[in-house]
Image (cartoon, rainbow, N blue to C red; front, side):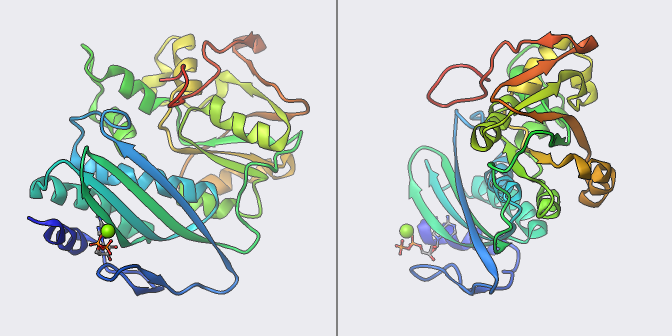
Amino acid sequence: MNEFGLIDRLRAAMPAPGPGLALGIGDDAAVFDLPTGQQLVACTDTLNTGIHFPDDTDPAAIGHKSLAVNLSDLAAMGADPAWALLNLSLPDTCPDWLDAFAAGFAALAGPSGITLAGGDTTRGALSVTVTALGFVPAGQALTRDGARPGDRVVVSGTLGDAALALSRLGSDAPPAAAQRDRLDRPTPRLELGRRLRGLATACIDISDGLAADLGHILAASAVGAHLDATRLPASTALASLPFAQRLSLQATGGDDYELCFTLPAAHAAELDALAADAGVALTDIGEITPGDALEWSGPGGQPVRLDTAAGYDHFGGGGT
Ligand code: ADP
Ligand code: MG
C-alpha cells in the first residue's frame, strides 16, 4: 500500500463530513466556510510511541486518544468541534494497523461532530499529531485567567484512574480493562465545556495532573486555592487505596482529561443540574483564595503536603 492508498483507506473509514467543509481531503489544502459571529479555536497535540502510549497499545485506542486529547482542549475552551487535521508518521504501511487506528478515530469523530479535513502522512517512528479546529461564540471562550477569590473549584468525573492504570502496566497486578480504558480512551467533556460558557470564570482540562493544571489557572488569574483532599472524586479502585497514595495519584497523576473549572459561589447551587445536563458528575473540591498558594487539607481538616507538587513535565522531573 502506498501513501495514497493509505490516505484513501483513512478517508473511507471516516464519518460523512459535517457542514462547512468546502473542500476536504484530496487537494493541496482544505477550505472551510466560517460561521458569522463565531471565533475559530485551534489546538494541536502529538502522541509519540513509548512516551504518550506504551508500544503495545491497541491501535484503535491510539486513534481514539489522539483525537480525544485535542477534543479535551476544545472542551476546556468551551468550543464546538468542527474539523481535524491528522499528521501520521508510520514505520511501515500496515493495513491492519491503519484500519484499527482509523476505526478508533472515526468512532469518536462521529458523535463529537468533527470532520477529518486533511493531514500529512510520512514514514518514521510512530507518531500521531492531530490539529483540531472548533468554534466558540465571539468573546465566550473559556480561559485560564478569570478565577476570583471566593469562586468554587469544581472537577468533572473521577481523578487518578489513568495514573493508577499506568502505574500498574507491566506489574504483577496489571490494570483491569475498565481501568486501562481510563488511560487509553479518555472521554472529552465537550457538553460540559459548552454549558460552562458564560458560567465558569476559568477552565482547563486536566492532562498533567490536577495540582499542575489548576496551578496554571492560579498563575494566570493571580490567585491561590484551598482544596479539600478528602473530596477529590474517586472511583472504587482509587477509593480503596491508602490516603497518601490515592492523593498522590489524584493530584499529580496525568491523563485524566477531566475539566477543572472555577465558578462564582452564587452559582454553586446549580452544579447538580449542570451535572445532569452535561452527563458527568461534578464535584466541588474547594475555593479560590487571595494570594498565590495552592493549599490542601486532609482528614479532619489537617493541612496536607503533596509529595510532588508538579504534574507531568516532559523536560523536568516529577509526576508520573
Ligand atoms: P501535499 O503533497 O500537497 O502535501 P499530500 O500528498 O500530503 O499533499 O496529501 C494529499 C491530500 O491528502 C491532502 O488533501 C491532505 O490533506 C490529505 N492527507 C494526507 N495525509 C493525510 C492524513 N494522514 N489524514 C488526512 N488527510 C491526509
Ligand atoms: Mg503532504
